[in-house]
Length: 475
Image (cartoon, one colour):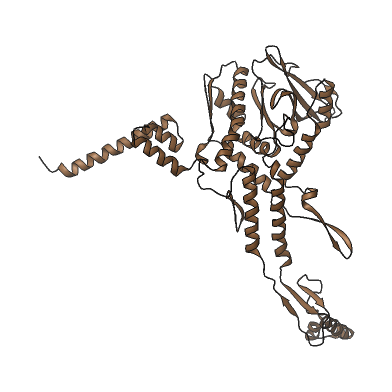
């Protein structure tokens, strides 16, 4: 329905980004889905003087990279704190924020753009919508700051005759005097507008804060620097994706072409056929032993056996080809390392083992490419979450103050280095034990205080036991 929405928005007088970015989004989505891309995965060979189109096998590293980024950026350990907005945890839970935002982060890293939209649904419940790139239509922008935007989503509604119809729900977020206002539209598949459902107003009340936030990977969109739409995290690494797939295809072909074969002399095959034909005359009265003689010794169509013309007396030849597994392992590892480096994940993030591509699980240094890359990407996602909290607070009549977003640093910091640094700071009087526990274990102040009390209680018990052992018998 993209064409229907774009035509509708243009009739409303809006100018949209050029089609170049939409085509690139489709290309990036094809990489993400592991689909065949003409220039990368289709090639031609000649067989019996005829061209035959072949398709390469695909390793699917684009999905792996984006899934990895999504898990590192948004997970259940991300902490969102806000003073004066006690309803926030329940709203986030009702909207499955951590699960769906993780998915949005993953697909945003693939397509370059995503969005979260906040509104009150027909029942008056604060709702968060998670929007993919193809449903985001910037309407006015300054650089990469989008001031007005339209979002669409597909809905299935029931007709009076009992059938269903797919319609498009379009929200237009306009910037007006005093803030932002949402226009709601329902479009039929032919672009005609239809009445809104009961409970959904054509215009929302004016909001002092935008009720949408755009998220993008924090990288330069080299395809269109001035576009309000972002670039995929692997946009400039597509050559390395191709390299991975070429080597992987060669790897699999090594097994296909290297399977064991048996070369059978053609004369021997003919003799077997003649022997069977000679015995066919008495097949009706043949003994059990003669019936066995009439059966073919092997299946001529079996892919194990190939015939060749040979001299009398030649015997079957076994072909047992040696596989170049180590060479392919090394080549594939090098290609994956280069891809990982280009995407910002650093060298050595993925390792080839017997089960395929494995993600490294050891600690990550603060000086590593991955650490620096994640910190860079956290900025737009953190800003979007802060904006989302402000929007939700307005919708429920609250005021959000001191909003903080703490990402899961445990998975990107070197745990050993963090522990060593905290011990040195406590020893030198530069850090309290309470703060050290919070930093090392990623826990709240209350949890750290509880652990300190447990430690103190254990130390007292140990001291009392030692005193009793030494002086218990005196006096």
